[in-house]
Image 1 (spheres, rainbow, N blue to C red):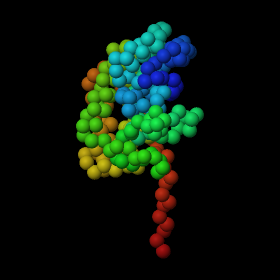
Image 2 (cartoon, one colour; image 1 turned 90 degrees about the vertical axis):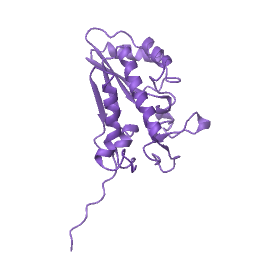
Image 3 (cartoon, rainbow, N blue to C red; image 1 turned 135 degrees about the vertical axis):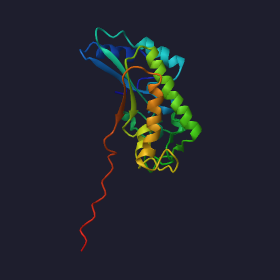
Image 4 (cartoon, helix red, strand yellow; image 1 turned 90 degrees about the horizontal axis):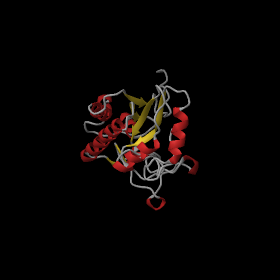
Amino acid sequence: MCQYASTNGLANDWHLTHWTNLLNSGAGLVMLEATAVEAEGRISPGCLGLWSDDTEAALANALPQAPGDVRVAIQLGHAGRKASSAKPWDGGALLDMAEGGWPTSGPSALPHLPTETPPHELTETDLDRIEAAFVCAAQRAAKLGIDVVEMHAAHGYLLHQFLSPLSNQRTDAWGGSFDGRTAYPTRIFKAMRRVFDGPLGVRVSATDGAPKKPAAGPRS
């Protein structure tokens, strides 16, 4: 869904044209692209955002009136350690500061690729800030008249990073067991539920895509 066509998270005429085509396609529900809840949560410098009055106003200007019974949904997310990446056609690698990148963060200080700079391990203060960012984005979506919100917890982005034992090796309440790893995404969902009355969904990945360990052979 990502268009990689934004500057500073702002929707523009590209989005107006793209969304107009989708809304007039005959679909009953149109999902807008993955939208970052804070600037540091963008996948790339070209990704859409909904974290400020400016990004909200730009999205409002670019989102045409949905015709008939078409419903509009938005996917809200945070890229975590996969943020600050080049666009796919530019290789998708982690960008350094000289290339327009920014420091990344994640549940644990484990890089997405071994050659990349490890992300900052999120503190309790960071977790509070990101929760507030998801809540604020959900409130802005409601104000824009968006019908459905999907919380992005898939594809290796931040909330998926909490769910996966490959990327979440915390020893506090937000890691360890299944209940611990699911605690922070659940907290975010409940916080968004308190401010958004419409349908609220979650996108999850069914697998981490990691190679399976070979099964142990029979005892001799």
